[in-house]
Figure (cartoon, rainbow, N blue to C red):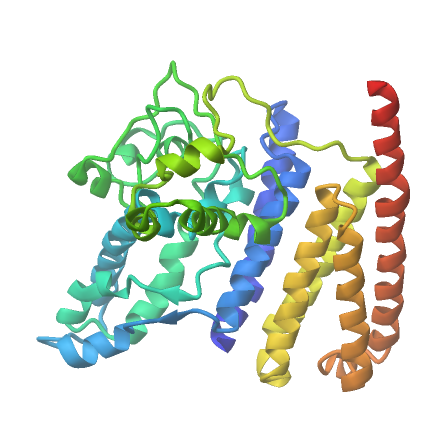
Length: 425
């Protein structure tokens, strides 16, 4: 956990700078592909995902270490070739896990957040699941385990393979010639994120596009079919925590409501999007029928709310950086309390981005929790050893944040609601 936190301390600023560079580059070209609120939502999603991982809140039913210890036929030493083999095996495994995520109802819930943005940019690469607490597919690494690839090799290669998937989430790089034959490129991945009928569930590879070509899921980006991004059942929220559980909640409701016992059981393992006929008829959900004519989620926002959302994001990044840099010092159970605070913070300010007046309740809970932590610990998880003024500053921040959120919830949003009612009348 601590090592991964240290890696993220280096990786996070790099990713953020690249996201902001893409925003600037698109603006300069007159082709801005990054909407501000969408970017903030994506970055908030990324923070919750890596916080969950750093805190070790995901467990594997079968660990890779166990498979190597019990199933390895030979044990190969850690050489350059070992790392290359591990990378290829990990990518092969990633293809099949990704394919299951797209094809099976229950597994789609773990992946939906990554596709939930109606844009395609570097920020949406950071939209990763925070709803996966049990990892089921370690067995896809069985080939590596059988030939005895050391667990420490997989531990090093896995973050590299993951981070290498970041760069191709962009619309600013066109087709790349001969590279398209071997590697996943922005063109390939634009197809993957599109909801055009021709493109859905295509190009599932992560690094090597050859897996799609071998297993029949490859689709080239067509010049006369521009990709349209998102999911066919739009999430209609900036709140990444809500997005992570929307599909699961629908499955739970459908399983409860359907009269068929058979459907109650099989709904979880049916193809993604399948619903029992009796439930689908009685409880319809919005689904995009014409991908070329639908309104993207874009609730009205004032310059003040936009600025405040950015301020909240910056504060979130500072707080999570402190956690990752001091996780051993913070220790258990305090690191889980800290993580819970960060999740509550993301939930609160993204609810306000959605213009939900109840965001004030979440913001108040978050700020009360923050003040109670300081009063109980006499510090902010040991931060006073770096900055003697940190306790006072954070208490002032929590009070100020409550007041500002209250103003948006009870003044600005109500004013807009009254104005809408007047216009409708």
